[in-house]
Amino acid sequence: MKKFLLSVILCLVACTNVFASEIEEDYLDMAASSCITGEYRTAIEYLDKILYINPSNKKAQDLKKGLTHILSGDKNSYVFALNPMVKQAMEYKRQGNEQGEYQTLINASSQPNSYLAYYYLGNFYRDRKDYLKALDSYNAALSVKPDFAQAYLASGITLFDFGRYESALNPLDKYLTFVPDDDLAYAVKSRAEFQLGMSDNAKIDNDKAIELNDCPQYQFDRAKILYMQNDYTGAKNLFTKLLPDIQTSKIYEYLGYCDFALGDYMSALMNIDKAIILTDGDEYLENKYNEIKEMLEKNNGQTQE
Image (cartoon, rainbow, N blue to C red; front, top):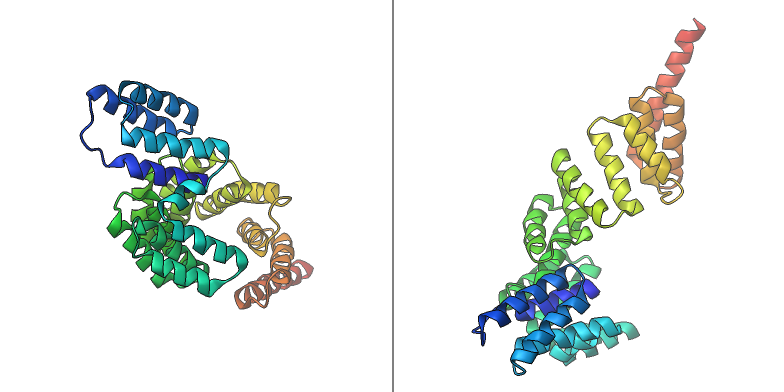
C-alpha cells in the first residue's frame, strides 16, 4: 500500500505548472527524487524550504501532507480524502459486502478524482479473474490521469495473469519510468520474459528484482532461468537450497527435470513422484513419471544382461 500511496502522491505533483521561482521547482524535483528512493524525511526538508520561500505553494503543501501520512503510518486517509466514496467501498470490502463495494466504486467513478475509483474497480475485477474488465478499468483510470503509475503496474500484472506475456511488458516498462526501484515490477517483467523464452532478458530483470529484494520466490525464478539456460547443476543446487522455504509441486517438478537432464533417473523419478503427490492428477507429470520409469527398467535390464 505504501508504494501505491506514494505513486498517487507523486502523480498529483507530476504535472508541473508555473512556479513562483526556479528554486522552488528545483526543490520540488529533489523532494520527488527523495520520495522515489524512500527518503521521506529528506523530501519533507526540501518541501519545508519551498514553504519557507512561498508558504502558499499548493503542490508542496499537498506532497508534505501525503508524506506526513506515510511517516505517521496513516496510509489510507490521504487517498480516501481524494475520493471519500472509495473509502466507503473499502469498508464494504472489509465487511464482505461485494455488491456494496462494486456499486459504490461504480458511483465513485463519476466523482472527482475518478481514476482512484477506476483503479479499485480494476482490482475488484482482477480478484475475480475477470481480466478483460479489469484491464478496461485500469485503462479508464489512465485516460483520466495518464501519469497514474500504479495503474500501469496493475495492467502489467493483469496481462501476465491473463497469459498475455508480450503485452505485459509495455505497461511494466512504463511503470518503471515512474518508480524505477520496484522489485515486483522487475520480477513480473522477468517472469513474462521467461514465458516468452527470453532467458537473457529474464535474467537481467530477475537480477534487478533480487538486488532490491532477495526473497525465496525471486530466487526460485532465478533457478528456473538457470534451467532454461541449460545450467542444470546450478539450477538443481539452487532449487535444493530453496526447499526449506518453498515446498510446492513445481520445485519438485523442476528438480526432477534437472535430475533427468543430468542422467540421474532414480532421483528424477523420486522428485517427479513428489510433484505428483502435491498435485491433483497432473497428466503431464504422470506421463513423465512413466517415461522415466521405463528408462530405468530398460537400463536395469541392459545391466543384468
